[in-house]
Image 1: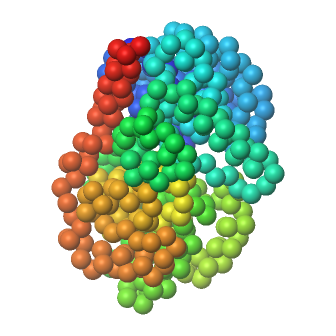
Image 2: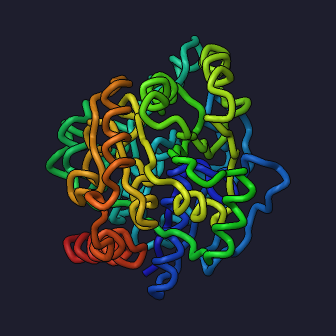
Image 3: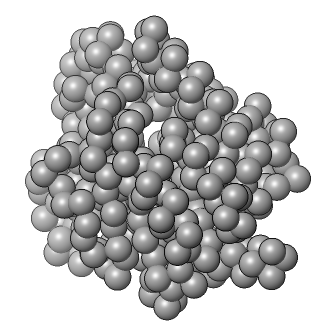
Length: 384
């Protein structure tokens, strides 16, 4: 099949959405499909056309930026051309252009599958408010014209104010997740890089330094943990400086983190092997997210695949990996004491949270996910 996948940002842009789309596109290409990515040339240094891992990437020049969205003047022309050539269309939202693409797809009688990643909540401000309204309108138009809507879990769909209206179209497919293979020597080298000492108890957190990630809950949990585990240390992976719209949040938390001294270490963005080593070193990872901008939390599955238990917020979708595997604990949102207690349970009795991860690995394997998308496309084509 000729499959068109459209999203605002693609590789080398780094986010959960782009990682999902890249893994899906690559897996579909490996299954013999002709896959084209339609996306933005958000950086003018990027080529407008290139081939990556068997996938053709078409980037359109950006004429205007609105908050995190972009306007691409050539989108209508390229959308019509590429959708006409495609056998199936897969749209990833949030994406302003998805409304136009879904309309053209329906007009040309092509199967249109919407992948709904999460609700969008931009920072406060007039421009961001307008962008939120435009995005929500575009999402509703896209959902109306789409034949099927894929989201990570039925749990998230049933609790999403947006998806509730379209439950008859929703299919739950977990995200494609892989973790790099890493040797023991590489793990030890990473341990030394982090200046870990014998006896250090390591908590891992991988996220952007942003309010919706609940960093402040882990910060508030640390004094409780330090009374029981004096050598406990947080390794924080991900962007933590100059995060768009999070300047005030960072300014509020930075003094509190500085008070923790060497019990908190920022590592920045890591390469895949380094990230795998980080997950292996951590005794527990945490995902204390606060709202529906988090619909699953792929990092907790990556952690589980490395044998490391997880403490996650009791949010729709986010709680499912822990509930389905038993490999961790879920805690109420913003509950620092509850987070500290759950982390303490895992640090004290790690064996109670170790499970066979083969089922987790198979259900999130990109080939497994690509096959499920493939079956949706085939079914919709037969119905057309």
